[in-house]
Amino acid sequence: MPRSFAGAAPAVILPRESDIGGLAVRRLLPHRTRRLVGPFVFLDHMGPAGIPPGGGIDVRPHPHIGLATVTYLFSGRIIHHDSLGFRQAIEPGAVNWMIAGRGIVHSERTLPEDRRTGQHLHGMQAWVALPVEHEQIAPAFSHHPAAAQPVVQSAGGARLTLIAGRAYGREAPAPVLSPLFYIDAVLPAGASLTMPVEHAERAVYAVEGRVRLDGHPIEPLTLALADGAPPPVLTAETDARVMMLGGAPLGEPRHVWWNFVASRRQLIEQARAEWKAGRFAPVPGETDALPLPE
Image 1: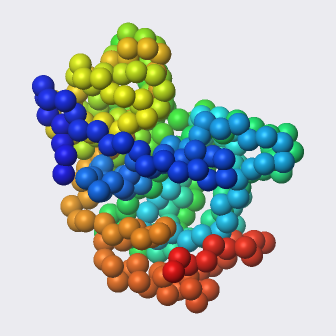
Image 2: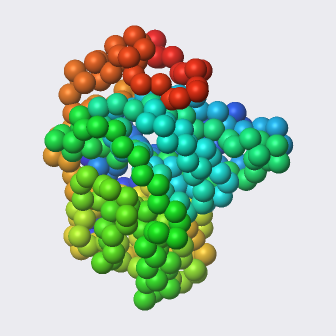
């Protein structure tokens, strides 16, 4: 498992890119060299993409177990609809925190009004694996508007929005179930900051612009691992935006298959059988669910 150490160039993960209906998606986690960073087991960067009038995304109803999800947008809107009955727009800076626990189903689609007018869509999708003692809890959903997210202005000039967890003496409102941090950091050229000291595992993803980690250049659209002590210093060569994430290691490996995450393969096999048999609760009013991959 690659790690970064003080004085050494950080290990980096290059994205696996795909195109989903004209929307560029870059997958960073899981990766063959690094399965998790803290509890983060999945990280995607989608867009930026201009979606013309008449276009949109339609992620049909699909199940999850053993994780919490968050779709964080820089621009555009998506409507979230789940089997608990929650229907909530995801807007820039807002946080929809969905805990799958023993099982939930949801869809993500373009709103009808945005489908008529078109929009610019850009954002991140992350999955957080749940601790073993919480893997089978009841599913839950909470919405936190952008104005509710703690914002930290660093002494070095960076503006940090805490999406989830705890860092820099602040705590986000999303109900996380293990120690973690997830931050949207905007840095003007020349700004610098030290990554959170209280978390053992860390990574930084360069969304836009050029940054350095302890003096080592991090190419745009790459994930740099920043584990260990002392925490590294991030410096912006140009105006930049990065995502910082990490937390305490879970202590047990996680199995990932399709949309399922679990500490035991038995739980994934059980979820497969239940989805195939139609025993997950449906999303109200939606019938076009994704089939189980063969």
